[in-house]
Amino acid sequence: MTKAEQSLPVAILVPGQFNDHAVGRIDQTFQQVRIERADPSLVTDDMRRTVRGIASFGGIDAAFIDALPNLEIIANFGVGYDSVDARHAAEHGIMVTNTPDVLTEEVADTAIGLLINTIRDLPRAETWLRDGSWAREGNYPLSRLTLRERSIGIFGMGRIGLAIARRLEAFALPIAYHNRRRVEGLSYDYHPTLKGLAAAVDTLISVAPGGASTKKAINAEILEALGPNGVFVNIGRGSTVDETALAAALANGTIAAAGLDVFADEPNVPAALLAAPNTSLLPHVGSASEHTRRAMADLCVDNLVSWFSEGRALTPVPEAEMVKARR
Ligand code: NAP
Ligand code: 8YV
Image 1 (tube, rainbow, N blue to C red):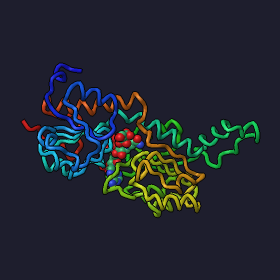
Image 2 (cartoon, rainbow, N blue to C red):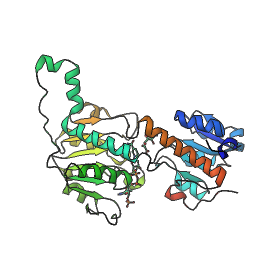
Image 3 (cartoon, protein in one colour):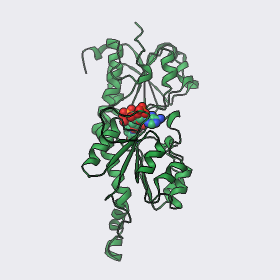
Image 4 (tube, rainbow, N blue to C red):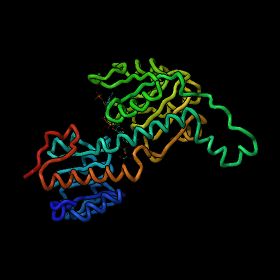
């Protein structure tokens, strides 16, 4: 805690469940106001009058922003901020911050683990040992798939995409990518379309953000292009996938397997994906270590402290870069 943090007479609203370390720091530094969820109908007159900041896991829409006339900043806990209406906030002079970089390496580690689990079937092999099948029935069946001789395509070659690519270089696998723009100075093959990337590789890793521009971008056509030896891994956002098309592609052999950390309607996972023998599923744990969540919590709260003590945000989202402190 810095000296400036000791005395900030500012009300910060925290909707719903939140990270314990962030809650502790906000409590020490600000006047913390809790609300069950980010619902305008729950905003009291007192909140309307006093709240100047929000710290949140996400889910801050235009109506909730409009319900808080003295709001200056939304500090999002997470690098992905697709559930915050950042454009609406910026149009109303409200800063939005996220937590980039501090989670990059953790999420890239998780992506590699999920990729190997999906291809080599390791979670089911462990179950085979634990439930006594090894002793009773003999060796676990050989995995149908291998990482050997695969070619990797990354959808979303940003901070995390690059960290995944650097790790996969050590596996001696060729890497290509698709973004809207080519990354200057990067030697991996660039594909101007997602379909072109999917057709060129057999292993597609998505780490693209959510939002309108990526909604259901991974659809039947993309999975068809990936092909019958295809493996799809999603560590980005569930909204980028047409889950009905994915379940069908896994069932009819259009692709071979999928590893998913994120889903369109979390924590609800489609029954067809749960039942599929060729999926490896995780409950959105990309950044979920104590170490990394603490770093994210610190950056989330540091943004609030910096805003209210120095008038600047540390990690504004691109939409909010022109937003100035009201002082
Ligand atoms: P980043 O550095 O902003 O990278 C995002 C990349 O996606 C950029 O290279 C961007 O390039 C590309 N992109 C954005 N919109 C696109 C579109 N419509 N079509 C094609 N490419 C597009 O973000 P990051 O830090 O790597 O994080 C990426 C995402 O990972 C987050 O937004 C979040 O959703 C997800 N995430 C998940 C977890 C987890 O626990 N599973 C944890 C952290 C993050 P262009 O702008 O050139 O298109
Ligand atoms: C977190 C994430 O699980 O940073 C992100 O975009 O998806 C994850 O790191 C999430 O933000 C916590 O709510």
